[in-house]
Length: 280
Image (cartoon, rainbow, N blue to C red):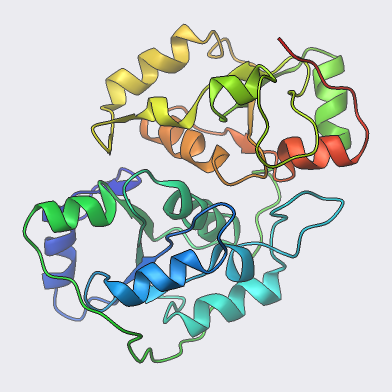
């Protein structure tokens, strides 16, 4: 039986794949910031046998603009991307990437956002698969298209104006999943100006992991408790463009801290709107 947790181990994956009549789809979500073709190139060089591939910029986001660098895709576009990838309404999806959950966590969150609950992240990703001596296959496999119905959930994200109002009223904890130096405004490799959304708390995505796997639920709960965000206020997570934030959302879910929301536009949209930022 698959775990109730949002992640699965290799052993749990084996159990899923061995179930008679099981409809399980491994989906490769590898992605490199600044190199939009890297993910597909890496997939064709070697991936978990039977997996399909989804592209971060084309499948898991809408075109960049005033709503940030990775706006949420429309229901229609996301449904089409899932259908092309062999994901149907009855498919159990196992998302994976290199090792650290970036692309996989984004797909995990998006599938749940569009009403598909049967989705997990492979803990350790492709790195863990290969380290266990398991095979990889090359090339672009043929994938039978399925039918996917996107039923968008409305209470798992917040928009910019809503977030600004919540922050002004001190009614929300805003976590920023970027690296500390970006949160402090010391460097900014992508957006035009370094800084952060005022009032945000730094919760680097990498802290959810230990040796390329997610920390235990107990460790994760302790981590977020130490950040001072478990006092009952709403929790919203952001990053640069709504991708890395999904790792924090996965970590929170694994820790048993439910109901946290994504700010999809994140810092890139906040900056594009001309809202105030802070540094230091």
